[in-house]
Amino acid sequence: MDNDKAEVQTAYDRYWRVLTEAYAKSDSAGTGLKDVASGSAYAQTEAGLAGLRSAGQVVTGKAKHSGTSVIFKDGRKLKTAVITDCVDVAQWKPVDKQTGNEAPLPQTRLVRYVTELTAEKWPTGWVVIEEKIPGQAC
Image 1 (tube, rainbow, N blue to C red):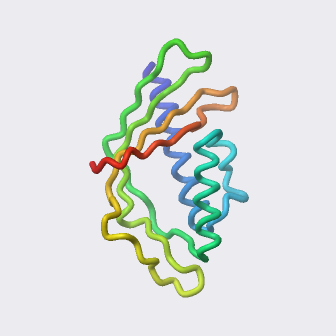
Image 2 (cartoon, helix red, strand yellow):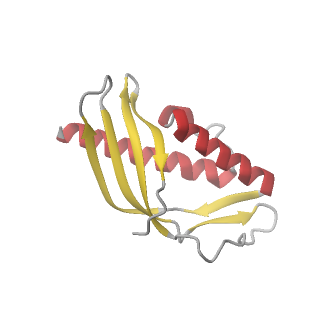
């Protein structure tokens, strides 16, 4: 089980590297997003990227993570893990692609929030299939 946890953590770290790369150019082309995400997680990311493109924005910096936990679900056809994390996006900011100016964000926006991801172990490795953000500060 410890080996599985290590694999899930490695896959989760890779998922965030790919997201950071995709959001930095508001496009998933060439990032390997299809290797690390599928299902609603993939669709949500592509929708977010499309929104950035239409607004003429990219995202600079990196999100920080703390308190990451991995729990495995029993009785599934594929090995399934739920990853809970505190994401800090204070240094991961949308900016205007042309000017580099920060995009205005709502004052009520959570800068540190809980995220819950579900990953499955596929023949190619762990893949994030769902990401939920319950709107809870951490």
